[in-house]
Amino acid sequence: MRVAGRLASEVLDFIGDHVQAGVSTEQLDQLCHDYMVNVQGTVPAPLNYAPPGHTPYPKSICTSVNHQVCHGVPGERVLRNGDIVNIDITVIKDGWHGDTSRMFIVGEGSIQARRLCDITYQAMWRGISMVKPGATLGDIGYAIQSFAEGQGFSVVREFCGHGIGQIFHEDPQILHYGRPGTGLKLVEGMVFTIEPMINAGRAGIRQLGDGWTIVTKDHSLSAQWEHTVAVLEDGFEVLTVSAGSPPPP
Ligand code: MF3
Ligand code: CO
Ligand code: CO
Image 1 (cartoon, rainbow, N blue to C red):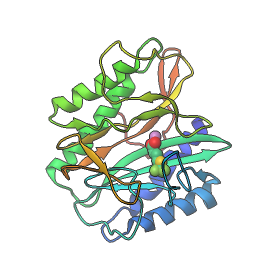
Image 2 (tube, protein in one colour):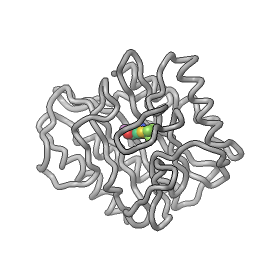
Image 3 (cartoon, rainbow, N blue to C red):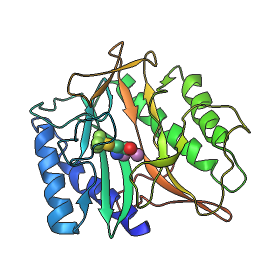
Image 4 (cartoon, rainbow, N blue to C red):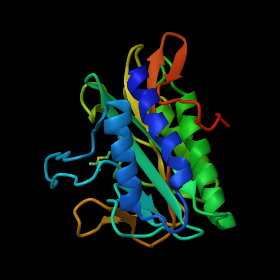
């Protein structure tokens, strides 16, 4: 899973320079798809992914722009200066999954947009820092929620992190809110994602007619970062790291 995690992160390293005003999200999808398949020899896990109650996902990556929370489907939309976009990459290598996402700001971005992306990054890391044997899922959720809400932002409830391995999404669910000491106890060897979605406005969301794209109900900006994390004997290891990963805060 270290290999799959590094490869997923390297797709984000690769695409960063292409995230510029004038590029369409489907161009980003095509570039990532070709890099995964032809350069890495990985399988893009989202392509044709069809969990119960969903139509097959039509693209190889997710691109969620501005008030889109997650699962934004790449299309003709062209990025403009000031947009913020989450790019979420999941690769399969030798049967194992690596799942990671980052925020990109097109041009300079507003002060609020930059702050939301930064606070969400810090929130993800506060969650990651809690990971060690004996800690609980509630400890992770509480660390994220208390920090994000303390900054005046809100936590999306309907989507969460997840166990991951030879299966893309498996138990346990990793909620990004909670109470200390509650929920499942972490055990060495568990691998799961932490991927908080934080809104500048209210927490409510709705799904668009494409059956995938999730947006904020109040149209406020939303940000997300994601890492795949393993529980080690003495703490955690982030598996989705590469040369271009932003350093921990
Ligand atoms: N990568 C997303 C996650 O973090 C899941 C995307 S599923 C898709 O769990 F079908 F929308 F691609
Ligand atoms: Co995930
Ligand atoms: Co993901």
